[in-house]
Image 1 (tube, rainbow, N blue to C red):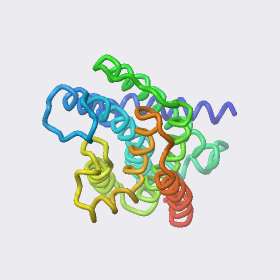
Image 2 (cartoon, rainbow, N blue to C red):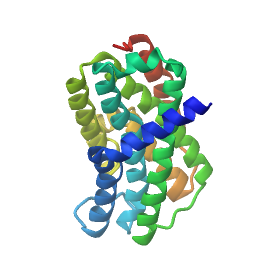
Image 3 (cartoon, rainbow, N blue to C red):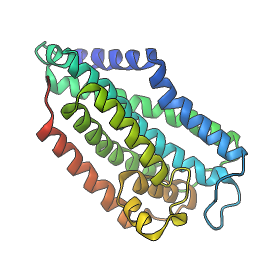
Image 4 (cartoon, helix red, strand yellow):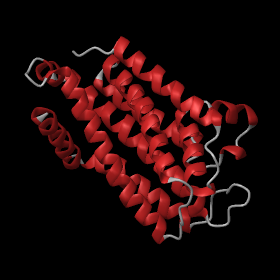
Length: 242
């Protein structure tokens, strides 16, 4: 347990020292939330008068995706290429505790993101409702799926290709995830595809859990659970440590 926590602290310290990680995990979500809440340039879903009511759950979904998929994918990809993973895997820490430490670090980052983003959103006029406990479960399930995608990239592609792929996927899921652009404004075929992606399901589930107070749509649960099983399974199958 001591080695696990020590490695988790190391993972968090390394994340905090990387300026690009801080930009990805906090800078971009905060800027998007503030800018699009104050500048009326995006279409809003029917019945939404205050932009932050739509944007806050979506930006929280973006933060979860950044913390669980993009940041670990890039960091792990370079650790693998530089031989760091191989060396750590042969130390008394071992691979299971190394993965456990990375998981703890991701969850800790997400807690910080939620505190910061909810604080900013409330200052902009957002009044969250619904059930935060359901939202936490939704975020946890989504994190498993996103982590699987990130590790699949990091464990199969060269580091620079992982960097490009993770950033490209981040942009695609940002645009098709219902985070800043409502899914109901997309063409029907594109919307169908978007609703099958983990980002679209996560933003829809968080919106239901935190804003409307309605039950999380069954389709969103099914999509999130499917990704939470399939992506880690593929990552375990294809991951190469060196």
